[in-house]
Image (tube, rainbow, N blue to C red; front, side):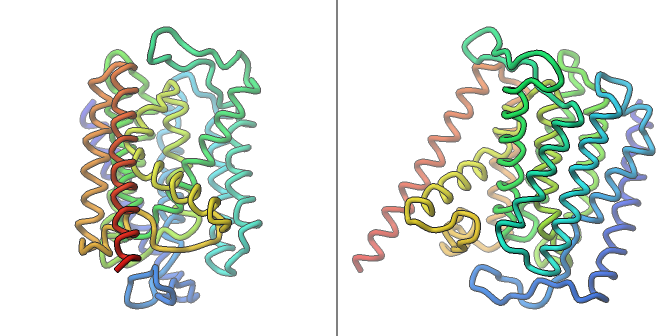
Length: 348
C-alpha cells in the first residue's frame, strides 16, 4: 500500500512542478503580474499571478489518472464532475479578474456558480454529529433544501476566507495543505476510513507542498484570484464529502475564518463595503505591523492550524466543539487586545 502512495506522491510532485513552471512562464510572457502599488502589498516587484491554475491542472489530472480509486467509494462520477465544473468556473473568473480587474459584483458570480455546481452534482449532507449527543438530520435526497443551503453558505465562506487570507506569501497555500493532510489522516483511520477522499486529500497536499516552494517568501508566483478561491473551495468540498466532517476544517481554518468574520462585521458596522474595502486590519497584517516578519507570521498560522487540526484526530464530537470554543476565545482575546492598542495609539 505504501508503494502506491509513494508513486502517487512522485507523480503529483512532477505534475505540479511542470504545470506551475509552465504557467509562470506563460504569465510572465503575457504580463499578468501583481505590482506592489498599494499599502497592503509588501512584495518589491511585479509577481506572476494565476499560480492556482497550475495546481488546478495537476490536481484534476492526477484524479483522472487514479479515477478508479477515486470512484471506489460512495461518491459518483456526477459528484466529482460537479466539483470539477465548479473549479473551472473559479479558474475562468480568476483569470478575468487577474487580467481585467473585475468589479466586486462580477467577482462574486464565479464563487456562486462554483458552489451551485457542487450542489447540482449531487453532493449533499444527510446529517451531522451533534456535539451534545445524537445527530442533526438535514433531510434525505440529492437536493435536500437544508443540505443545499448549508453547503452553499459553507463553500462561499471557505472561499472568501482563503481569498481574504491571501495577503502574505505562502500563508493560504500552507494552511490549506495542513487542512488537506489532516483530512487525509482522518479518512485513513479505521473508524472513518474513506479511501477515495483520503487519496484526493493526499494529492491536494502534495500539489500544495510543491506550490509552496514557488510561493514561499519571497514568492516567485502568486495563487491569483482563482487560486485563492479554489483552495478554500476544494478544502471545503473535501470536508463536506468526507462524512460531513466540518469540524476538522473549522479547527484548521478557525483563526482565519474568525478573522474574516470580524473584519467583515467591522466594515459593515463602519458602513464600508466588506468585499471591496481594503485595509491592514487582518490579523496577518497586524502581526507584521507589530514587528513580525512574513515568515514568522506565516509560521504562527501554520502552528495554530496544525495543533488544532491534529486535535481533531483525537477528540470526539464534544471535544471538537470545546476546541472550537477555545479558538473563539483566543481570537476574541486577540481582537480585544488590538482594539485596546488602537485606542491607546489614538490618544497619544
